[in-house]
Image 1 (cartoon, each protein chain N blue to C red):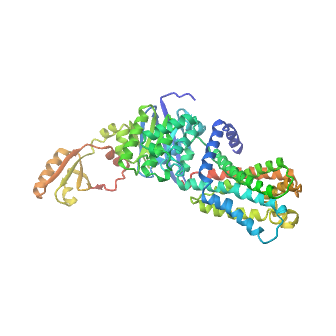
Image 2 (tube, chains in turn purple, blue; image 1 turned 180 degrees about the horizontal axis):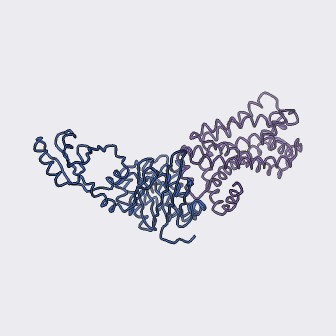
Image 3 (cartoon, rainbow over the protein chains, first blue to last red; image 1 turned 120 degrees about the vertical axis):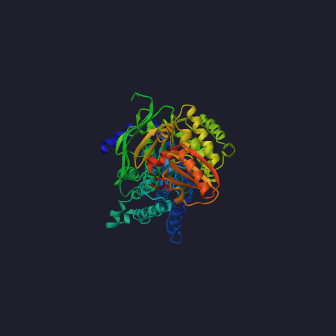
Length: 258
Length: 318
């Protein structure tokens, strides 16, 4: 059954599929980037988390910046996805969207792309500001691949978080915060990975952010605590799992709340 | 798949269950190329479920639907490319302008952007919205939103147009405009599938209508033929200058059923001539003045009521 689904998916990967993804992404960018929940949960919240951790604690920014950048990418890339489907169901536009020549996979990929673009743009700004003030000898290729893959992974998580059937976007944003905050705290952003021992260390492997922090640590400072190959494989595997679950849950809840 | 007939919409034994409720039960019908086909039924009869299946939003538990020969279940994208859809609950994007909504819809069908801009302008002109084309849709009235909704659905010149209750809740002016657009689209060759509560609308627009009740098709025919079939459902509509007790007027054996409509009474009968004479005598005897009185042929609404038995005003006398 799953194999049949995969065959159907590959057969449908034609020009109409990509056109649908592009147009739906454009729609998402035009409509959702300026929505208050995206700005609050995607920009203000990580800024306040950073300030709460940084101010008055004498944190060495040179060591903290890779973690800050990872946190920024996580919050921004995963903030758009949870908004879109509940917002469209509440506004009554979801049924119209489904009536266009698109499939559920088109909609999922477009929502992921919108989150990715948002995350990458904001992260580029944070990165440039960091590079102006901090003296790093960066591995640009590694950072670029890391940002691309991680933004895809985090955005996929955002879309997965939008799959429960609710008609109010605020409920989903609260639910997504319940998932996103613990992932931040167990990821080695606030406590360096090498200092995490025992259960804390084990838990850190459950967060995809951990692997991005490790990639960034190597990209900025040449230090890696896990392994770059494992980091990339883990982020890829998390992405596959998030997309697979998104597909299942969104299909199951497709008509709920219309 | 090559089509063997002139049908552009085919529903073959569509069945859908939601839990223990059978929403659609072996629904079968076809719509010919260039036809306006009306789908009537009371609330919860299965109209929206049918349209959602025909437009690929819902998969049937059993049965098949074909759009211009394409199986919607097996090849939904190809089938959707041939149609425009105006869902009952489907809104347009309130955060985009009228023009942006139309262009966005057209892009999904691969219409080139230059052509889309021209088409959007012409549609906005046609729908009387050209001077508001750059305004956000959130500032529009319900009627204006529905006009943008329809313009968006036809931005790619679809061969088949599905409309789910398109004039529901709109002002008279918007209703007339939308009916005109439907007629114009049909004259240009578009096949129209229309669900509506408004029986007079179906009567005016549709070449054929299907009446669905409790998930089953009750009848499919031309509105005029349906009326003729139910010609026995004749009635006399009468209004007096003073209120009267329906028990008095309904005492006659000539009256099968009686309905109150505002200040008028509608009396269903097998013999309108004798009932007319009886009512004149009745008015004289009770010292009433007859303000109006006319014999009514069976309307499509009468047919609908008879077949679905949903009229809450209905009062059976016998």
